[in-house]
Image (cartoon, rainbow over all chains, first blue to last red; front, side, top):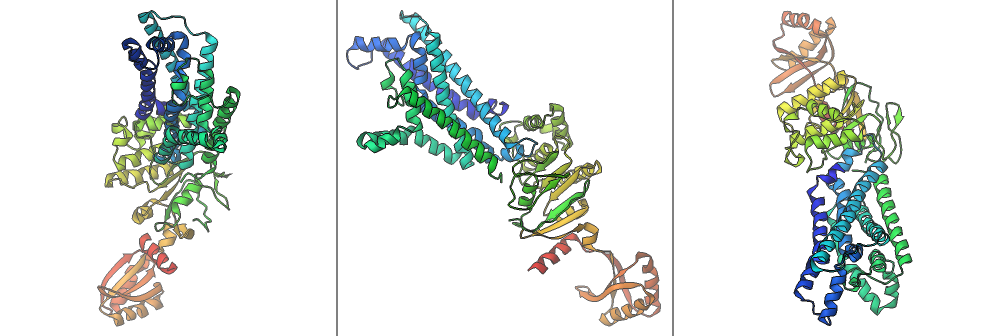
Length: 272
Length: 286
């Protein structure tokens, strides 16, 4: 954990995502709300919708909407850095000769990164509730706090989504034994390829079946199922392609598969 | 690739592993510390078989180049390793002091010179008082004073009963430092033994005016039982008789040669170096 805590790259990745999430979830919508710059449909309706999304009751939904796509990309980067850097810096070789099993090493590293994920999701949720409360008070919007069950559901879904992408990143770092190539591949996949494939899926039904099992579809649909902020359709990455239950199962399977892949490759392969 | 290796390293000795680039030295050392798996054969450390992918107990290693987290200080890095071994910060600080890196221990690892990184690598290997220390090119990047410090450290560890395996291309250092040497060529150990056995006994070189005089010296000395394994040879400086002579017999032999009228220009004790032995081994392999 101390390796991650004092690592500038980790703070940069986490900080960038929190900042982007905050800007797109609250700053820009609030400016739009204040200036009436929204031009979608009737202005009053548009203001009403934005105001609803800015209310504290919707904060949990809003907080997790950026997680499937941008949050996922960031967490994949984090995962690749956590495991891949050990190969780039030769640190795996150093620690693997210290009377500790490789299984313990990879488990510890993933656990430390997962703690970062827990902290991040909790912080984003708290930031979301806090910011929306301040806005609601300032603008005379409804100040009711979100109900605990909704908040817990959103926390759980957000954690599951980010953890899955983190584990995928960890697996890629171990499989490629570096950071550069898996980082590039992960970013292109999460931000570009999956969206392109879903586009193709609209034209070719068979591709539609295939895209339904992609991690982006599963995480997006999980968040989409929970999202009741009425901005869901406008948020990139938030989908309604598969049911909540199927999305949940697929996400859990991806997380388990990625963790197993990372552990197996790390334990079985030579450290040379 | 490592193929034919049968090597027992006695406890508490310093053993050198030498060989040309690509001979398999580093791979062999990686196998010893469990970083690289074997397809056959076994490695035993302190009586316990090394399992592929698991480090043997009480073993410290610096394999090839040191690897540390660049954004952490040297001290923080070694303390992390100490934690993995269940040791406290004091053990880490002691290891850092042992390699004389206290002055820069709080600097970030990325600011270290090659020699400092190497010292830190050795400090990491010393955590937990290892019974076996495996060092691959430990003097790499060290200045002359650093090399001397490293050798003193290894001597010290051996005196304390630590078994040290050192891989190095600096054959002079290996000869000075090690009790035993293994020469590896193309994945196989081609020679293993005590340094003294490999380099052979001290020989006496009696330089004469010409080859006839050298041959005469041999014929004079032989009946007295002064020489064994003698040969008349020539180098850039002229002819000489090269022989194994017991040191206490040398004065008597020289007196006998002079009394017999042999022109003795020089008498010198010479010993083959490990480098010469190594070159001979490689030449024979070719």
